[in-house]
Length: 326
Image (cartoon, rainbow, N blue to C red):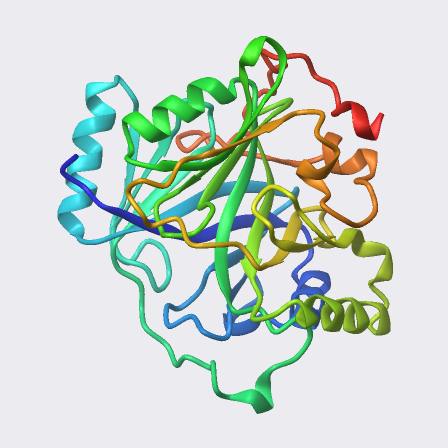
């Protein structure tokens, strides 16, 4: 492959009321880099790039794009060649069209998820040791995306064989088909995960925390600020990935995972871990079982060319929750 995708970089979300969104994300501990009446750019405390989450004021919630950082401009050109060879339409956003970011390339992936690739973003002050500014869950950095799609097996092969991702863990369901997969470019458990379900939709964006206690701090601050009902699931520990987790929903229903405690995956002889769909310790090693909304609800995504929501498609595998949560 003649390109290098480094990591999950940012997400662009549409929200309906920035005045409601801002205090929620600030309570979690995100830093506001810049804001105006139509946009808020958030980042984590250790991030040196301008933002990892862009909220745009619109009439209805949606996902405009999930973005990956690449090494250099030439990577964008090579990715364009790849997508054209597959018959995929791309959209170039020239430098200056999006605030604080250089030229970007967008494409709908094999599942319909709107992807964006960029090499350049403005630098800002890292606040890692500005402990006087740390609050809430003390969000450190963006970690991963989780997508609900109709055909996980196709997504798995596309990302591994065409985009150069590696698999850390996967779940097999009926007929030994891949029901879910955790794929990475950086040396951790995942930059993106795919789950069987009505799609394409974005299930959640994961943000890294410095320690498990930050999950508890996040819950305390959310509750004190009047957001206890926005806590959807957790705290707990996943069997898959070994991570501590907390899932929250923003005022528009977009799901955020606060995440800490996975492991190194950089060794070339690392072997993916296989899970059975009905293993009760796969999703919840310990903690309360996931509510129905965690399986059923997710954020709809936009067409990169029309800006319209993509129609949802039923999953190829049986649409059912694992037996242990029935």
